[in-house]
Image 1: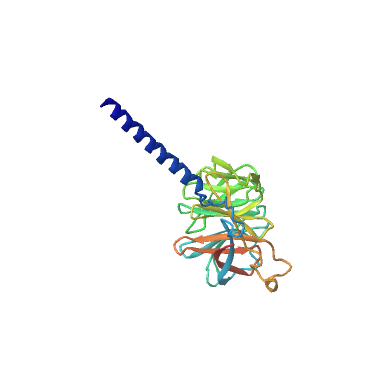
Image 2: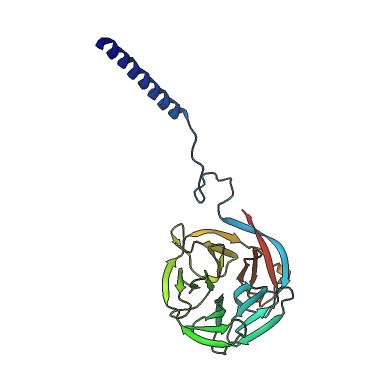
Length: 279
């Protein structure tokens, strides 16, 4: 009896060993590879993850004399910061007509830069004067001056902090009441620093940044500073719309309610609503 049980056990063990070998053989024959993840595609013919060109949805008039440094869209209106000494201002602008509805000039000694709105206030940077102006959003009355180190370039907000660029590869997350630095991130594209980040806009959890003197907007992860991709806006403003004063692409505004993206440039006669197209 014990001998029979022993023989049955041997046969059962052999059967299990045969099944295991069969499974190993099947696994060896399966040549399926995991699907490539974003930013790690092995198919060179596929669209580059995170990289976009554009389609123009609508064209609006824009003040050709506006040296655009900051641009936002809020409650149906554009708000714009313009630069250059003696020409700097903060403005409320009608989108459809381009008409300036409200304007406060900045003193001659200041060269205005980025603009952001948060908690009923407008915050405007200056380039080399280490000063930010705080305005009441409704009255445009200047209420406060805040100080910061280094240069001021672009400004946006994630709803909690102000996010500032300074011409380097660093983005600062600032306390809006004091401009004290809460944290910083270094912007990197595949490990390489990305500097000269100009106008900023917070779009669907990402930071969009004009790269100065280029036709590109980079898309940045605000948690890590990693560049997630870019938007190539080459050819957006036609040669016939340019004159001797036309300067670089600069100005990004996002209408969250309507999911609309607007872009323009320094001394451009037009502002564009665009739709992104994967490259």
